[in-house]
Length: 270
Image (tube, rainbow, N blue to C red; front, side):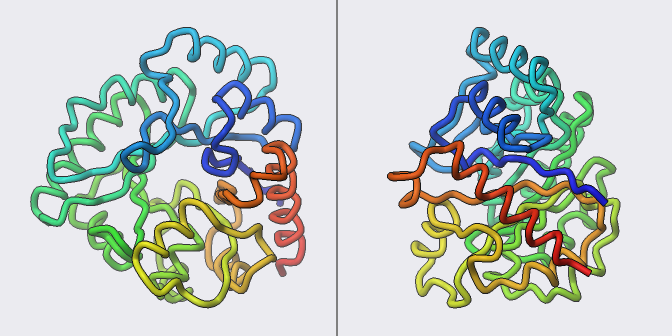
């Protein structure tokens, strides 16, 4: 089976959306993810929701290349998250033809967090988008068990969970738990590799996740076990930020290496 592979935005963060699409097309990706909102204060993002020329240029590049948008990111759902403020974000995602919205849950209040998540799902549904919760060890939803508890408690038809291979490993989520996730919750996954040793501090954990991952096959994560535990047709977003490598290796070459490494891993699966 041919897997759908997407180029994640943090793999080539220096590229504006039109260039991301072109690089994806030249390096063998069928889809891309696009970052419209930063993941942290001062982090990179592209103003597709407010820059009409940038949006037009991105749409033209999508039409010219045949590449599609898998997901847009990122909603960081903190204590002050107002679902009404995301309508323009959702509208832009729909215009781009995106399927999914990535969300990280930072609100420590369970009741408020779930109420707001429901509201975000309902607003996104108007635009044909899913809201996909990514568990991360340093957030209010730190592992797969916590993420599934959120999804079952809120019970939204367009909600899902993002399986990121790094966060599976760093949260000590067992591979058996991946097999137990119902396919209806799985809209796409993210893949990368990493050393076996977990970073010693939260700051180091975050830095590694945002800036220094490894191409599949370069590290020690049980990627084959994770992939075989998930549906064979799940789209794969290749998310491999390499801040140090980016100083000497251009974005297009890094994108190519990421795809080739992923395809080599997939070819070895039973």
